[in-house]
Image 1 (cartoon, rainbow, N blue to C red):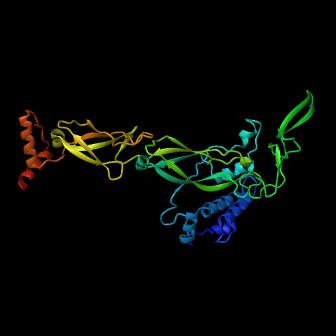
Image 2: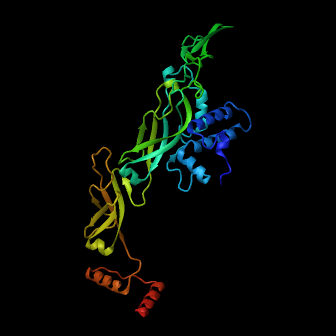
Image 3: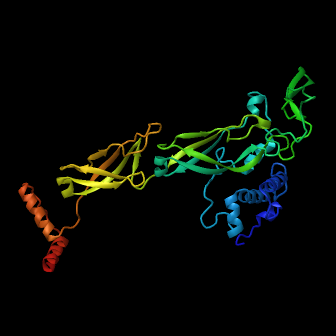
Length: 381
């Protein structure tokens, strides 16, 4: 393989290993090497290497490209959008840090709020054409996902969740100490249940009893026609998975519409420049422009006497209105009258006659260069 790294060897799996085996190997090695639990000097670098191997082998397209070409991108790329800006910049390393935390915390907000999965956020950039038509974008990202072995319960086969005998289900233990000020009482998370109030006699081996595991996965984002920059799409239950089957958070997708080479968007209207000559502006003309929809042509009627900067409009040729039942904004053409930088002798003669007929003074002091060019033109003619 052109790539010097053998991802199968890094994870310790065979080349024909299935996804379940690959994930088990990844979780095992990641638990051993994560800097939160392994203080070896090379632990962080080795963890990143394991994460890189898993991000490739856990994706069918990337794995196929890697097996065939030695690179996860292959000759045509992976075919979808891969994000690393979950939680505002968190990647698999941070997902594991959250995983090791186990969803446990202080009293703030109560146990249900602590156990529920957090919302996650990404920013998705699409083209103006995709915004006009609507599209489906497949994105890949890292999150704590429901454990596949225990289906999110955290329980191994035949296991049970019981009330913690130490804290009696409160999740906290109270200690009393004698000080110079008298008896001081304080509460802290229960050391046996980690503040959960319950314990599992036989926790799931894959997730350690959490009911969720770090995972690199994909989801299809349905982008509606007419969407604009800044609009947010909510994908239910695709944020961080909850602790032991509690509700998952949502994936929040903020859409960015890229700039277009021809159109500038103004609400649901599309604005584009229309270049016309002096004669076309004076006499009137028709200008055709390709529309934003496939095989669509916008026909702008330029009336006689149009001035530079004037606008002309065509209804129902702009962007679709979200939820508008097929209604669209306008196409707006901004006229730009183009003055020729060089005229042929014939064109100059006609333009001079026009100026004389209109009583316009067109005489201007000629530079030496102008006179030389005129002389050359006379000779060539």
